[in-house]
Length: 265
Image (cartoon, rainbow, N blue to C red; front, side):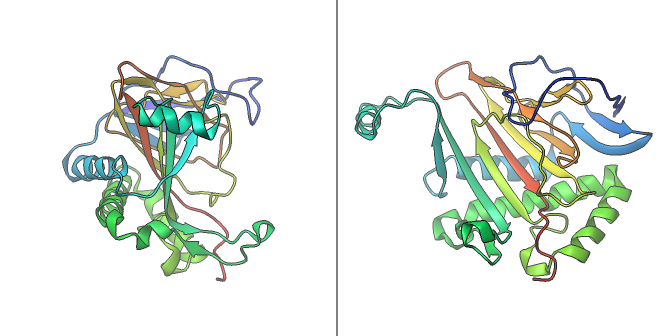
């Protein structure tokens, strides 16, 4: 794998800024180093069991069997207009999102307790949940192989901060699948410090949807069947616009992440 030393640069990007299209400058298997320490890596195309589980999870997620939250962007018009368009087979670009694993308490939303995603209880989503858990475990094996110190460090952080019933795999608490969603610049402030996220990508007949980290001027080409491991709590990052090349083109990211807020529960 290529070694990439991350060097901080000056920029004017702020939280909430829209991430415009940027040509990727990281497009081959790479390990990211900061201050001579490995902090993440990129694999352009996974293979073996992980590729198989990723295919199953993506297929299930895009079906009607998995409950999803719909987030439509663009000039939607009234609800009546939207229903009429759907009946005639016309749909604007639509984003979907589904969460698995655990959610932390949110007292400001009158939810004073941790919870598990309701998708786990949906009989029709059984294959999706199973495929995501298997993909998570395969991802952990790859982290252990490429960054063994990070694997052991994160396993200890999870053991010290997350009761077993709230874990998703060994290194994470939760998962989210985002379909056609390009995100403004943000930092994952709710994540456990010292941990990494995993982003698995399915991108077919579409361009964009790449992760930009302005602190280092890095834009990672999240190609079809790619895997990105990165400490999302550490830096501002955003996702570039997604542009289908033909009707039905899409980009789906399947993410594993470790939330803080479970200690003592």
